[in-house]
Image 1 (cartoon, rainbow over the protein chains, first blue to last red):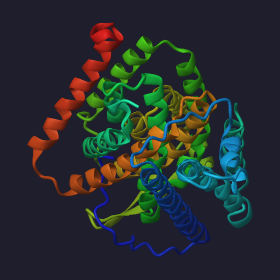
Image 2: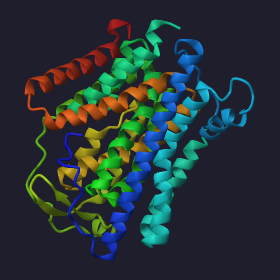
Image 3: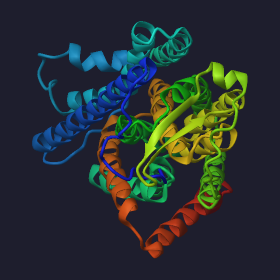
Length: 142
Length: 281
């Protein structure tokens, strides 16, 4: 990131054509999705580490996700909710990582729908669908 | 649990890595991985942790760039098709590879990225050259408002058919070494596709997040992600990078930047030496 944004003021380009308006709406959607994902994930990870510290007086989370794919990893702890010691540090840490991984994924899936339904751009619907499909496949790897 | 794997230490190391990565323009991962291996984490685990954190730094920065309207979403989404496949292949190769090879590959890529910091990007306004048919068909054009010059810059991307396959290579390196490979992506967008520097850096940033996710999935499936270690790293890298980017804008003192550049050069050499069997690999 050698280039820095020189200002926080939003660009004074007033979208006029249909394409420009679509583009601007898409930029805002993608931008806020990414921002929300990162913030939620950071909060969840921080909560997890704080809980661990409160519980044990130190942070000693250390475990591996082994032989499991992303969805199994995500649902394992959440399904076990209600049992003792579950809704604790580990759940928040797992949730934080899951939210982080979901962030770019949701961005791509939302783009597929945007290109298909809003912009009605067949080329880019196919391109983003391909990306979403490969990502989904990779998330199910085990 | 040894002190070496203390989450507090991980957290501190990650803040510094995120900071230096952002300030130098090299990205967090390229500093983070040597730092993690120095505090005793195996290189494959360091790579796996790093690539998860790359999702965070990339998405955080991209969210601001995209809302500013500089990022070219269509260029980004077209090139993502190539980088994600590259990243999955790269991550699979790392899992099968020997540690020493990874140290050497990492050292080489670090030194290469370091070198590109000194390459003068072309800065003229020649971004309106006539496009080829493929780039036109792909709608690889755009405009953005440049606050520095106070005018709207319109540009036309070219040679998207070269950019795509090159991006497979960039994705491969990203997945292989757990980094964003931003320097390489910017080079492709700039030299092959002729995009303005601001568009290149911000669009590269958008692509990095999705690419890192593809790689992360492979490392998670292979059991290389330790969430207990990844959590403090992610929590450290993001504020570190934010701080580095803020400071980058204001910093006029070349001496500080040069100091970090020397640190990065030493890290690259150190990785190479470890790969060749010095320091006990």
